[in-house]
Amino acid sequence: MRIIAGQLRGKNLIAPDGENTRPTADRAREALFNILNSLLLKGGYFWDKITFADVFAGSGAIGLEAFSRGAKEVFCIENDPVALKALRANVAAISQIHVLSTSALNPPTHTPVDILFMDAPYGKGLWQLALGAFDATGWIGKRTLIIVETDKKLKETLPAGYTLLQERAQGRNTFLFAIKEA
Image (cartoon, rainbow, N blue to C red; front, top):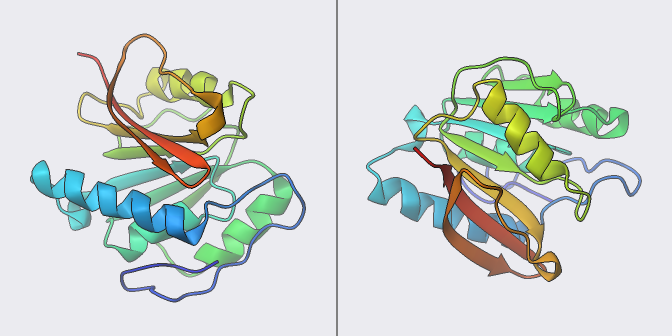
């Protein structure tokens, strides 16, 4: 597992031991960030102005990829002790990446981020609960792009109050791109 592009391109990442996490494959991450680059350009956004939250961060690969591409600030939310150890090792000495050791179902109050990415354990309904929790605590604003990674076999749908912008399959994953309804 490595960083695909940007200033940290090629950096090898430590994956958490065990089977509690399943890091997003390099090809899926590359596809995700190609889509994001296109969406950001269409919207007139640039990476150096983006705040990014990586929820259920695991190794932090998604948050690190966002930082590597120029995100000004990244928040990695994780509470599994084994994943936290790998995450902290991967982001060591990068002051723009903040590791929050907390449950995604009980995040601290925060101002809205530009992009909120969630890759919860599949099939447990956790991303839906976390989405509500992040919305309730201020992380999601009217311009926040929400991305949910799921297993494409699950055919997940967004809860009421969110608009699906696009759905993209990549390998065994599906990425849902959404915004909060006004």
